Image 1 (cartoon, rainbow, N blue to C red):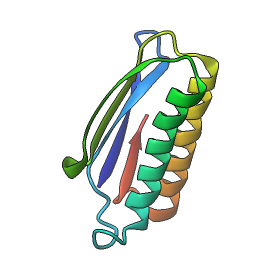
Image 2 (image 1 turned 120 degrees about the vertical axis):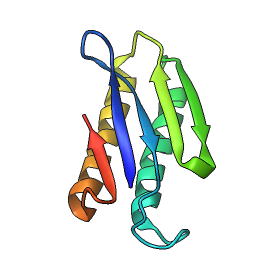
Image 3 (image 1 turned 90 degrees about the vertical axis):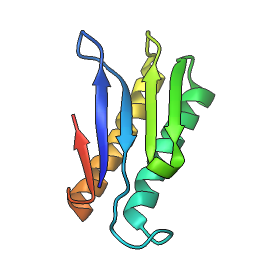
Length: 106
C-alpha cells in the first residue's frame, strides 16, 4: 500500500509530504495506481521547483518507494496550489481504487 502523510507546520499549514510503499494493485510495471501516484508526486515536486520561489528539501529511495518533501518556509501561494492539486489527485485515486492500495493521511 502507498501511504501519503501530509506534513504541517506548528500553525497547521501544509509544508510537505512523505510518500512510502508500493500500491500492489497489479504486477510491477503494470500498476496503474502506483504510476498515477508517482506521476502526481514527481510532477508536483518538479513544478514547485520550476514555477515557484519556494525552496525545499527532498530525499528519496526509489527501491523502497519513499519520497520525503519538505518546503522551507515561507511556502508561496503557487507552491501551495501545486501541492493541494497533487493531494486532490491522490484523493481521487484513493476514492476510485480503494484505500487498500493508497491512503492519504491528512
